Length: 255
Picture 1: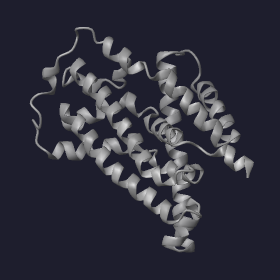
Picture 2: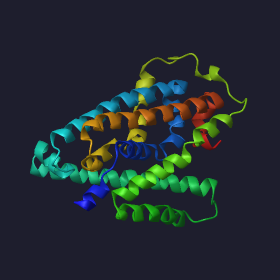
Picture 3: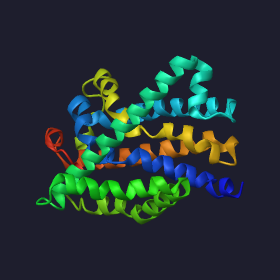
Picture 4: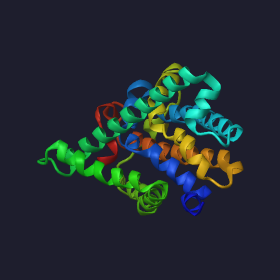
């Protein structure tokens, strides 16, 4: 019982943990694919993606609140039956694996290009992976504490990004709004779904949240914080680079 109590997380930790998982490396590359599809109206797609994922997040919490004594696997079996539930659980496990693998590849690529260009990629991947394996084996408390530490040590970075623009920006790049119509904006929304991924971790950390009635509030705050961060990075990228130039920049944040 004491061990379970030790693993409990506060609402703030719940919010920061989800928010941290969402950010990952998506913020570094998202402005470019959005601009390729929707031009400088891509920031509107971020808002549409936020609406969609917020609705999904609310449904996730409502499902968990309705089944407070069941884990994710048991919930799937309750709603879809034994065999279909198992298949869906395995599919979700594969999704988590490939999502994590994809994030690791992106992080490895960034470190190799910008920091250690002469270091073999596999060595960088191992060095990035080992700390997370240790944290995962240490339990939820270690994971949430790490998320909090990273959050507080990186809160200054958005301001640094703003001041790095100096006078090299052109807000008129954002105009006119809806220059290509609604369809490209809606189409580009698919580019935001993966960067918003992370809400589903609520399936696993919800049981450790004592104030479960505040879970909907928590997941919406986390998702909204992610939206504002993506908007901030994307809009700054659009006013710094030309409307055509942003399409060719893989990691606009580093420029």
